[in-house]
Image (cartoon, rainbow, N blue to C red; front, side, top):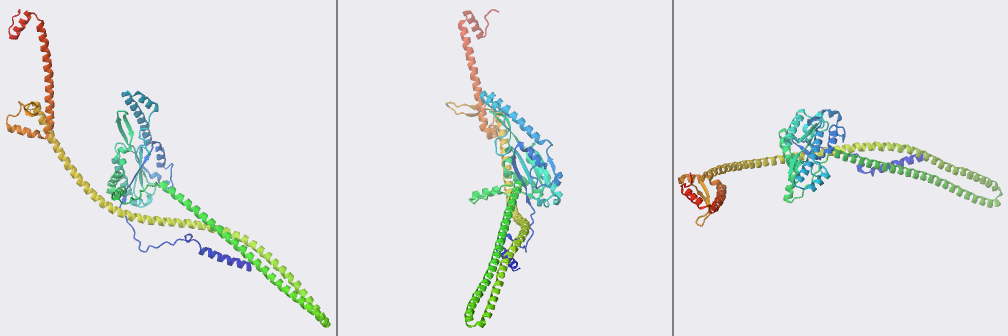
Amino acid sequence: MHLQKLCVGVFSDFAETRVSTADPSDKMTVHPKFTKSKPVSLKKYPVVLRFKGLWPRDLRRFILHDLRRGGDLAHVDLGLTDSNRVLCGEDDWDQVIRDEVAQMKQHNFEEHIAALEAKSRKSEADKVEEAGPADPWRASREGPLREGVLTVNKDWFGGGGQAQWKPERVEAFRQTAMSFLLQSFPGGQLRYASLHMDEEALHIHFVVVVWAEKPSANRGHQVLLQPSENPLLRNYELAQDMAGAAFAKIGITRGERRAEARRQARAEGKPLEKKRRHVPPSEWRAEERRKAQKEKKRLHADAVETAKATVEDGRDLAKAAVKKSRKRAIKEAQARKQRAAQETAEAIRLRDAAEKEALQFEKAAAAVSSLKLGFETAIGTLMPLAKGYEERAEKALEKFQAKVAERKVEEEKLARINREAEEGKKGLADLRRRECGLVAEVQSLEQHRAQEAAACITAQSARQVAEQKLEDAVTQLQQKVAEAEIISEAIEAGLDLVAEGALLWREETSDRKAGMVWGEAAPKTGDLRAEKRKQIHPAMGMVTRIAQLVARTVKRALAKEREKLQDDAEYVRGLREQWEPEAQACLAQISQGTDAGPS
């Protein structure tokens, strides 16, 4: 009983010591109280528009995920999947895209060979034919198609999940989104769009295909998949501007202008903010699961180490208690044995003294003998007592073994307690994550509110500047149109004067310079000529060039006619030299207007 009390007391002290020296992080967190908390209300939310490259070979994977038949579905409420809607696209839209790719692949191949053969580059044409048809797009890290997502924060709809959404907002978002997509991707570029309503936030997935014609002398008429031909896919900032303008009418604003802020910071020499990378929900969930597994393993390892340390400490404590109890029993037995030895030595000394005295006192001999027997009896009595202490030590060992068995039971209880503690830590970690999420969300809402205020001011100023620029451009365009009309009328009047012969070009001679002069059909009076000159003055340079061309063309034509007449004259002169005198006389009479020949 004494040993049991000792073990219990020491183990209690050890347990108190372990608790007092434990890591504060192992204890339950005391959350701060918000005594002056205020709700944050954000009336406007930024539209979210993102694009990602897509290969034609991945269209089936896209459809499987869109139909909830594959991919990461951990965030999807499959009970609401039937409420998803296809907003654009036929049942075989993906096969149509693949057929178009195959047709353009063959078309570009044939055009390339035909163009090379037309330029007599037979060897190159043979190489192209040997290589075979190539994919109808330029090499790039991303695919030639574009997959897009269009959404807004779930709070704008009313909360997380379809049950909390406001139907009128869902319908307003759908109509605005489809109007924006159809206007931004015209001519059949928008091939597919679906409305997903089985997740926390409503969103639209869509696929865009942009074909571009690329004629060239070496390749012929090529038709390629080229997303950059659409300005929204070429300029991400323009896409965000257009989306913000389209959704402004339903209270959704443009996203934060991070690229513009980076350019301004670079121009001002300020440190650049680290670029943010969009993390897809599937990647974020995978990372969260990885962190949870890592934390689970760490907590499990800590619990195992703590349990091992506790068990080892308990064993050491029990061993120390048994060892201490055994030493104490042996020490007491040795003390009693020593006292017995001392008493025996004293008895021997007294016996010797008695024997000496017996020589002197024969009457005391019997008494001394009796005392000797008493001492011997006492010694015999002490020996069983020493053996009793040894038996007690053995019994203490048996009790220790029983205590070890009890300790095993305690270890099982401790393991159960550790499991419960681990579950408690998991719950605590969840609470901590929720708290961190709420704090981050509050901070994000405050930041968004400040950013929206700044964005409103920036948008107003930008709109004023854009309106002023537009007015200036319209004014300049009107001026240019008026000038063009005046020049057109002047050219028409100048052409009429040149055609009528009223205005001529005179070449340079020794006594006069080259320039425009009035012809025979020119106006007779000086006032009329001044009026005509004023009318054609805006296009005088072009009229002058036209008159020069007309004069030089006429001059070249007359020169050719003179050459022909001279050749004819030379020919006639040669004939005259061959004629007889009688024929020459006849010709002379004909030239003089008389006919002396036979009638």
